[in-house]
Length: 232
Image 1 (cartoon, rainbow, N blue to C red):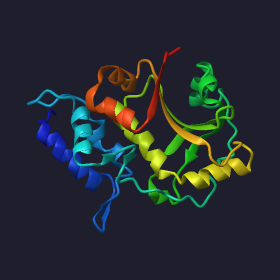
Image 2: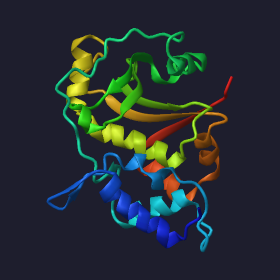
Image 3: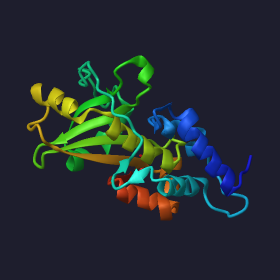
Image 4: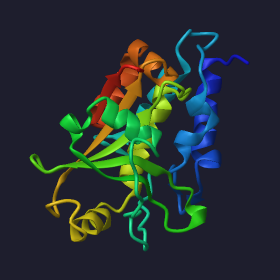
């Protein structure tokens, strides 16, 4: 089904409130907006021939959901349990770790300290997970890394909003302390960076190569590093 620009804008507005979360005391909680149908929808508007993702991104800017380096309606979740999963992982047991090591991403982002890091406090929180958390001790940088393998059919807009939501959802002080006190990081004030790794062949990577305008502005304003890698 195809839509006009006005229809896409209306759906984005409805999803922010109805699909994305809840409204309480005039506060919109948009923690799950990145999961909405509107964010994942592909195509061009029938009247203005604009990509749906560009229209949604413009909607976010015009309605001041994006301000400086923040998505203004994301609610932080304080996790009472440890963030550290204590999982054993290797390139043989994790596809994401395999992609990380095969492309020597440790040269850019240091050592993997955990994978599939949960951010929820209760099961009903519906918070996502960090694919890979890595730490580069030489520069005291902690990396939140989301990997989109070649099989991913996610839009670039979804990938951008997902990693930003994860960044704002996590209780940064608690997460840092968890990994500091078990010796996984060397400092209690590392610089936290967000990284999208896009594998060749994925819809996410293909869209990233095509989009400019509002999508490029989102990546820049939210200070997200994008790394494209080959599928091999």
